[in-house]
Length: 266
Length: 328
Image 1 (tube, one colour):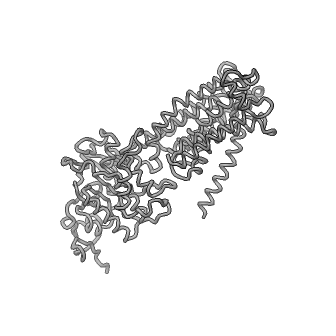
Image 2 (tube, one colour):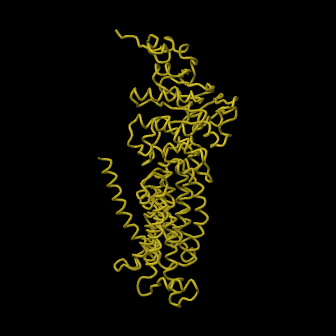
């Protein structure tokens, strides 16, 4: 990774107000992405999780305040420079018609190219590394449209890996997948963190978030209501307050991480 | 560019050259390859020189230039609107140009040349679309829907003018309204050539970010592009190219719409395929012009009639196959 040695690197939102139309989703919002960690963002629908992610990735611009990369507003960076350091996988990305797995993964190299240099010596290696790291090397020449949901998600993550960024932001990467493929994706997130990348993912399943991520950020109504290690954050009170769910927190029999068990309805 | 694209490009180029040579050589006044070689040395006969410089040469060059411009315009437009049925025609460029010509002929007969009327009309129509969407060219759906409205209004203006005021000159106008290559001049060929020389490099620069637009706005931006800026520039360049084509050949229908589809089907891979679309556009024009010059029953029809008939059939075929695919 081209910037992993940087020690001052930071990505955060400072006093940011982000709105769709008139209604602000985030209002005076502060958040710093925990560096070098795999952080899961959880919270009820409409709490501003995706909005936060998009603001950090420059695809939504704060109306007031700023998203800052190394303390410089994202808007003042060249867009290619940002894309060399921050990758975003949107919730429901569009698959171009007729594209092959390899073709899609190679799109991740775009930030390093320019109209004058559309191929670089490191491209082939970055693409083949991404293909094998996600276990889709065998599918390289196949069409993406013909793949299953789980395979497709691996291919998208391979594209993000080919982008070779320090920050990886994933918007609900496990939604619409069966549980086996959900765990696959979470393992890939852990692998990315092990490579020294900072991973921030919006997740829905609290137990998976607590088990696989090293940091948990709980959002509600456009604010961060709790953040820290899953064992400290996930309490019965919090689950009741944020999700309106009466639950007991047990220990995961495999990992010992907190596990939310809804109270049996009588 | 892949090896397949290069091969296809070479084949298309060969077909354009063959079609051009046939158009020049066919029939009574035909100028064959020996005559062309003689002309290149400046030793051609008077007849051959006249045919080349006044009759068949200019219309051939204008046809190729306009075809390249329309093909490129369509590919740009379809890529950034992600709408396979999009083209500058759909948003009122051709209809606006037609209304411009009709009004120029009605209000300022003999004062405003048809190409100028066409450019002004096209400019007004596209300006109206830009204003009416409220978001400029940022939202593809709004551009297309307002464009359809503007095109309908422009067509109404043209029909009013033709019906009420122009019974005498309407035959001549009719040719212009569907697009024609009859009695072109080398000056017009220079105009379209010059426009292509200026606009094509701009398109080449844009093509780098254009290639990412099929991933959706969010990913295009996350990968270092600017979706709205790319879309706006692509539509502006598309409109300028189509307007240049309209200025020299009239609002020739369906070339901008169908050329990118044909190119895409030939390659069978995603991408704007700008060069191939332009070449397909040129080939359509060369073949259509051959038909109206040398194929008995079609002789002397405006070339736009041929492209409209061809395009209509092709569009129908496209829709039917798309529906079949959707049903399967």
